[in-house]
Length: 198
Image 1 (tube, one colour):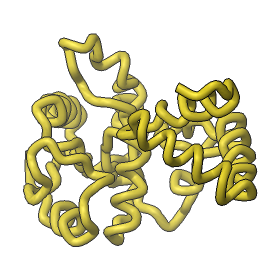
Image 2 (cartoon, one colour):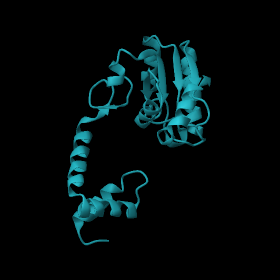
Image 3 (spheres, helix red, strand yellow):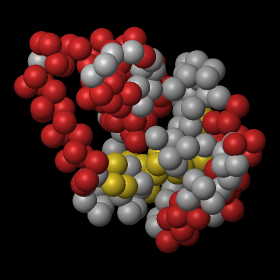
């Protein structure tokens, strides 16, 4: 432990990042303070602006600074095909790796009864409203290949069936327990293009 409270606070703040332990946080803090003060100030400003201005799209729930994100407002996208993902990071991964031109719906999690996460915590009523109100032809189930992701996909497929909407599941190739935002572009592109009926 250091005797400098400001340094300790910076190290503790960096530890909130996923995968960052005490040693990594200390290394980052020391790097910023010893070698990149301009980078530290830029990081500070960017975090403050993002924390104050970025929220969730009122339609698809991805991250945006506007009420409705640019993807939802893009008239060249096909509103009849909705790709359901767990996180905004999954949207970015699919956009970077594929030529998908439909729209998205972000669950901000996955069904996990043991953790107290049910349909209402995922805002599935909003997705069901979209299926009811919009001319949706296909619901692509792009949840992760974990037990909870599969349970969520099954629940969504039943929801789609109630509305007469075709439900497809992204193809395997996504490893069991894999997170979409960490897959290489080729695997993700193959999985999306090879989706199947669910």
